[in-house]
Length: 258
Image: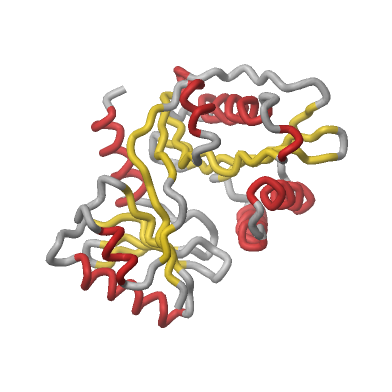
């Protein structure tokens, strides 16, 4: 895999030419900035920018003013290869708060294992209704220790619109949800994205996360996608590297609260 070629493709398909990720959401271009705008529970933020030292501060100010007028918290999703090189420092100077850095990892689907090897006692449940969304949200809160209220509403919106751009699954130990994950499909691109992948503490280290990666890789392969992409935490990065994912860049969320 040619890293520079795939990174350029990733930037073009999923950032510069991004499509809205849910009903009622729109993607707008404002000069050299591409942003997504939706309701309060949607992901609002900057997906891509092409700035330099002379234009960055004015562009940041313009986006703060725009989202503040809407009363929206928003995220500037910055990447290590974005220009200017001090973009993160400029965002923090403008009042943004930096979140944890994540690794942008990509793998060719043909190189990934697609045999789903589940631990004994685990079964997979596809998510097709609100009860399934509740299970995903519950696992999210247990695994990551953060509120899932906005995530729950976004996923319900996608199901209500019969969206074909998301695939969700929950790993069940009897009646207990122990791991949940989703895959965001990007029609017209070569990429499907892996999100979630949270496992409750008692079931970590047993291969459930790896099984859900294989499950989603098999679905993506059947749908004709070429690459899987993940924003990986420090916990999931080693697992993904062993499966065949490589690091293209890093990304840091900078959040602004009006």
